[in-house]
Length: 276
Image (cartoon, rainbow, N blue to C red; front, side, top):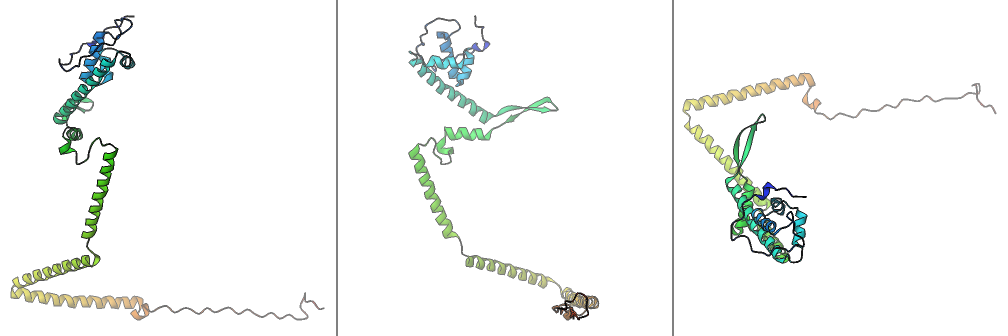
């Protein structure tokens, strides 16, 4: 069976000098649709371009199991080293693409009633922070070490506990007592009361003599009217509910009268009386 040409094999090779030299994995049979020397080189180049084994296999029209099978064959030591180096190179290119997307964003289509009406630039701030933390950890890692081993994690945990204990001690020492809080509140209230009194005094001093007399007359008339309203309200309540001393008096418990039970007297002449 003849393998058909795959258009995905028509690709631009990686730049010269970036693909490591390696020895072709020897094959028992020479098949045009197998892992030929040209296809092995093209696979390593695609792997360096994409950083993906699946994408590299598609580029050379071969299966992933076949690629992994070829890598573990005798005489594939150089091929495995080239594979690893190509992956490192591919990851670097992926990082460059990710950084470009983080900085310049990507075009996102806009639809209205199912129709494409335009595009907008969408930026991914989380992707940008991820790239910055990995490319400049000394500036953007937020003080957290990356790739710690067991000893590093133990040291990190020890420092975290130490810092927390110091912070707790400072917080406890700085916490005011209830008496201090009460004194501060009283001082604040007294300060507000003094400020209000001074403001009222300044307003009163700014009034003319006629205005002061009118205000004092208003206060007197207001007090007289309020007293009259209270008296009328008390009189109305007295007519409806009775005197206040009667209304507020505690209710006396009522005496419970037990009904008298008549005493039954049997005579000798009564029916059913046992005569002997």
